[in-house]
Image (tube, rainbow, N blue to C red; front, side, top):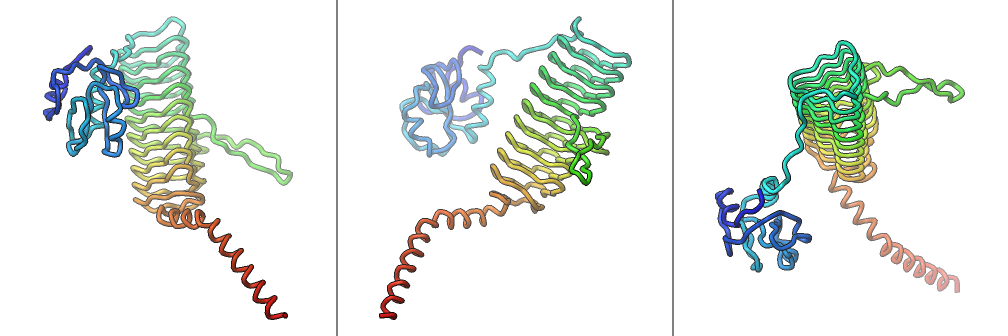
Length: 347
């Protein structure tokens, strides 16, 4: 797609436009960085100032938009969703990988490959690896003995999958991901000398999981570390040994989950949230950014702070902290009054 008229975009979404429908759109961009010819979007009225100053040739806005701007508008129910769909029309063609095995790949005995698999340069596949139909190993990937990957997987360069890990269908692993490295397990003697505890379990990833760059999922001490269906893990996230993460959870950048903790379904850990070991977080709970979870969290709650507490309690505590300078001044004034009264009484 090289260009579309505003009215053609509106027609595609079966919605209305305001202004010159003949305006030609040749690309998309963020509202603050858009240039003439590009389409941007505004999700909320509070960004009206950006809409008034943008250089975009047209805007996607909500149907309740009521601010006059000097460019055509396309009104939709969900501007962010619509913009994402339109952006795909102007995106460059997706990179494709032809089926086949690169001559530099090293394939051990017993490897089973499905139909139309792509094995890129310098991949190493250990014994008894199994890869499903249409799965792509882009290059420089290492799969340990007994690894299994389902259909339509996409494994980006330098992602490593250790022995006996099981991966479902349509899983995406980004650059530098490590699945199945040893759990952090040691036994300390009376002198504090630590001896490694063998980590003999596995990792299992469900269908439709996506894991961002340089994130890690440790293998279980025994049994399995389990990542459920549809889980989305951001960059630089650490999941410890024997952790269970329920279906459709989201773990945002630099979050960490210590060993043997359990996250229910649809849990969200915001950026840099940390979960201590042997913790249970209930279904639908949200843990705010930089929160530290030290005890179990009930389902469908919103926790913040350290130690993690309810959003309401966190707000009360924060308000009290913000009042400390005022309280300090009041205490100083009261102390001065008390001293004056004592001096007067002693006269």
